[in-house]
Amino acid sequence: MGTLWFNGTFFTMEHENESVEAVYVKDGRIQDIGKTETLEKKYNSTIEERRDVEGLYIYPGFVDSHLHIIGHGEKLIRLDLSNMYSAEEMKVHLKHSYTKQANQQWLIGEGWNENNFPDRKIFHKIELDEISPDKPMFLSRICRHAALVNSCALQLAGITKQTMDPEGGVIVRDANGEPTGFLLDTATELVKEVMPKVSDEYVETALQVAIDDLYKLGLVGGHTEDLHYYGGFKQTFDQFKKVVDGKTRKFRAHLLVHHEAIAEMEQEGYEKGEISSFIELGAVKIFADGALGGRTAFLTQPYTDDPSTSGVAIHTEEGLFELVKQARLKNRPVAIHVIGDGALEMALTALERYPLSSGRDRLIHVQVANLDLINRMKQLPVILDIQPRFVASDFPWVIERIGLDRLEYSFAWKTLLKAGLHCAGGSDAPIEPADPLLGIHAAVTRKRQGGIEEYQPEEKLTVFEAVQLFTTGSAYAIEKELERGLISKGFLADFTVLDRNLFAIEPDEIPQTNVEMTIVDNSIMFQRNVVR
Image (cartoon, rainbow, N blue to C red):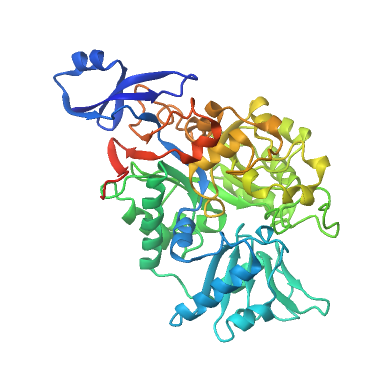
């Protein structure tokens, strides 16, 4: 028996402005679309339930193509520093947290960003010691490729003047060689190794909180990378299976697997592919570099505002090649984090040297590129996971980092699409807000929410192109384009229901649009103003 959804505008996303007024669903899949009267007559004997959507606007379910779901949950349950707009404000919140969390072993915060501060201040360990003299502190930067720690944390990790920088990381030091408490990329792992291990209950709570919040944002699924950081593959994967049970929570969770978690995945008897109707194991995740904010994205030429560095390559060229080679031995695709053009060049060389026999690789972020690299990408079966919201958060300070000469092919989403490259849209939450409407707004307007200045307006996407990133784009990224991302016969009954027509309103109204319902597998997982 089936369900008839009617009295709405259902955007198929097959063609721009194409819509229907009703959809008939059976066994979690769309059986037919068209006029309400036609579907009523055709399926009258099998319609068990009729759902009147009361004139709302229905889109294929939005899917975030790149985020960290558990990290998003952590941001919601931990001290969130992402909305601090001065060093003094951050200091006040840290002091309050120290007092409030007197029974906690560590003081942990998420998301600080010195580019939001008028003076661009980065705290020194001595200042952090004044706030927390007896409790170790670990404060992740917004990019999660850098962290601030106090002296207690440095001591526990054994980091001294004599400690060598780890491969792919930097221990920032003062003029005398003493660590300042600012750690970049893999150097943060030295402290993470001595932090208390997370419990199953903690991971479960963070995952539950995250998915429930993602429903409210209209997301029916996400491609996430979490399986290496919370006690290893088994501990984290067990919680995904527990939380995304297909009953209490239906959510399309596509899980990338960090290369260091592959061995444990194999030991547990798992391989790439579907584990259940809602959980899939995906490509091998590899980090090639860091982020532009902390100047750890690996560039081919030095940073414009700091010629002493070109960033950090997480692996040597040979090391990156070997990781891709190992993936290919088992015909596994890879998903490589590449922000700088230097990292992108290394990644492309690896993919060219070890081609994929079937499937699609993924290049995540692709923020800085050039024409030669774009032409090389066109020759490969690659998906580009882009984060439109980076435009709103990284400009204008990113111009200082890379200079005007490199800007033409940086954050160049329209150029990438025009080149015929397949792009999927993500948020990189908790780095950016997980709200896909903010990503769509940034892609269309190329400016901050409520802002005036547009950055690279020639790279604006149409609303249709921007919505495609989070629908057909995300589906194509995981080879599910024949069953996800469209409202069409045979496709999964996953819908995002909004109170506005995104294709008809002014672009600046997009962030004010309300998510009315989030529907997964024909089940309402979120409904505004209704308590589940």
